[in-house]
Length: 508
Image (tube, rainbow, N blue to C red):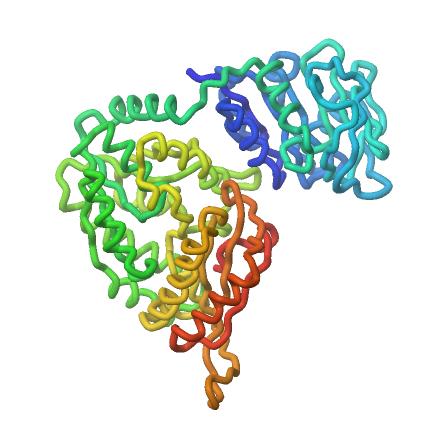
């Protein structure tokens, strides 16, 4: 069994970033809700996340760490640090002012294992409304800022530390050093979590699990399902059948292009043209959730019909990745209304098949690393994420075949423009949204009253958070001009400059 770091989540928006920093050290880690602590077998260290809650409130998250404290190396971050002090009899009080943004950590004990190798004064990122005002006698202060006396501390007689800043965010310039100190040097977790080791262990696990039974997988054209397919193919060969459904909501020419590429990889793929079924199911629907459900149900019907034609199918493979799991199992219960279209629900229950999810432990960038190690073609490997419901959730309001045609043309111009300008690989995800808005325009000497579209491009690591991409004005101007001139029905182009949070990447 591989060594692991356990991250207990108290609801912080930064929890997934902690995991990302640990994984960057080639150390395996898992996020679990604070109230659902798993087996501690092979757990080398535990990290307590931040939280929007306060330890002072009546319903504050209160973990049971009986099997962890003074037994396994422990690091509390922000809320986690405050809870440890509160739990051991110290005082946590509301700050006079919210402590948010950059601060300079003045390290008072550079010899401490957690801070070893850091500068005497190091920039850190603060984000909390409470602060530790009094520590128990068993605690030693090892770092402060101008406004936060107990910014970093440790317990005298145990491997337990607490910090009131966030080393996982990039604004903490030496945060990586601190995390490495805890994970590698204090917890002594082995750095063996690599793409090649993952491929080797996963292929072996798939063979042991599937044996002589058959597997069916729904391909989407994206990197997740493609990497899952190649791993399964490497493990069980012809026992895998892939189904690629054209739901009429794909990008321009995508069905043929991607289908040809899959077949060139040696995969056993069946392409299914079901466009009209999806258009019919979406007729009259305007609510985003209703559209998602209609698309999901139609896909299940089509997929199930095709799967029934395959003999001895006992398994359904899915390209579920770790952020899907994180968003579906949170400290507050499943986030079904946040992301109701991902792979963790619906189809398995309907088809009564066993589930295999080869990528469920990986973040998106890790999926790409694995894909590269098994020679997935660049055209698929570096493809931007594309939502399961496709253009159906990028057309606000009712979906029709004509609206899809318009948006496909707009999207094609935008995405192709990013590629030809050398900007595509600088963007994590991009697309166009057809707005239910008509605006006045002038073309030639005539007044027009046509649709508006919004362009969206973001930078991200795993989609859990995202910033809008600062594309060059000249590029945006050129793309806008091309869209308005070439796509009938569009006379206005806007650019979305919202970040996630508070906005989502998709509009629906």
